[in-house]
Image 1: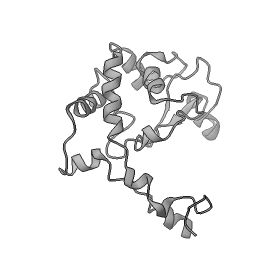
Image 2: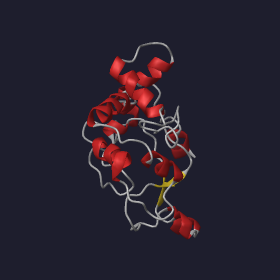
Image 3: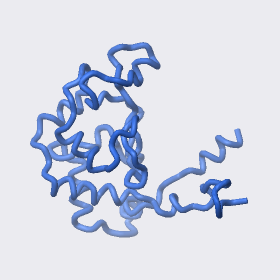
Amino acid sequence: KAIAQFERTFVSANSKYDCWKRGETALAPEEYRGYLFFLAETKGDCFHCHAEPFFSSADFHITGLDSIPVDPGRGAIIGDPAKTGAFKAPTLRNVMESPPYMHDGRFMTIREVLRHYNHGFYQAPNLDPKIVKRNSVTPMSEADLDTLEFFLNTLTDWDFLTNPALSDPFAAGGRQ
């Protein structure tokens, strides 16, 4: 119970995005444009799986990482072959500071992830319909991906990431 209570203190809610939503600051034009790309079904179309305010969902998705899923994912847990290769959509909060990416760490940069969702996924069996829909729109340009990254940077909460109460107590300079 003590660990669970401690984990409930892990709240990231002071990023530039959060401050903007509270009316405390403005997003730069390229950050706001990236936010619009994030929400637009004809651009990034990210919000279906990474919904505000947590930038996640409780859903599991087959995202076309492999033509034939190597890792059974959710399918093995629930015994459903139709969910083979499905993984939960993680939060995007602090995403720019949390590589490597994907369930198996195959992408070292967020740009690799964005390129995967932009046009690099496989037409895997049971590919998530949201990904199929994303494939039906014109791929974003590299400049568009830059703009989307500008927005993703606004999800970084430095107060949370540097909170000494959440540091490794066994690391040099950590709490005693």
